[in-house]
Length: 110
Length: 114
Image 1 (cartoon, helix red, strand yellow):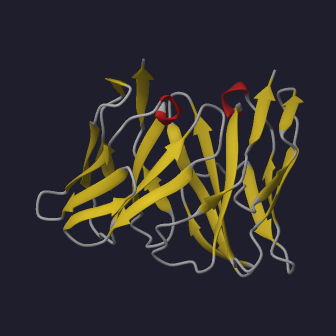
Image 2 (cartoon, rainbow over the protein chains, first blue to last red):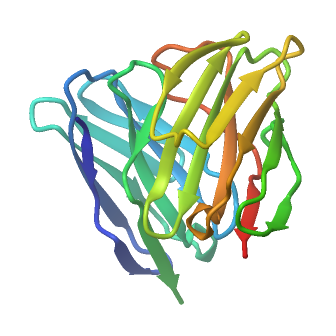
């Protein structure tokens, strides 16, 4: 089977940097994705790492270590609008649909 | 706006009833996925269709079924509804159907079973 572990809640101050970790267990691995979801809204795609290393997209970066089955999402220069849930996800054993972690609720405070 | 549409936005119904949720994928996307999101279970994959054919099944109950039509829109049918079926149901789409990390989610249908 598959499992993904990420912290349930993280709080950070506006302007700061926060890192959300994700560890996974899966038999087949294509890569690690990150999605953002605001309260009551649809998940939106943030980033994808298929290979080891850091991928940067603006204020957001994502890192993957395949040997450690570990990745993280790094959010810099936090803004109030970054308060949301962040999900890591891997392609399921079927090779088709996404298997999501339970999500990390990020609260950005003034 | 992802380009994926879902109707209805909200649905309130009683236990034992049957409902149909509808999804239209982004233009050009052949694959449709259905997910259920509840507070205690997170986002759970239900079923995927690719160009009209069922491609993969996840944690979908036997009371639930889906199909994808020739125009590529999809419907999720939920029957003999129970209180525990109350959740947000999302549809997502992608161009292809294998190993797709980037999926585009619709706004969801919030189902309340009373």
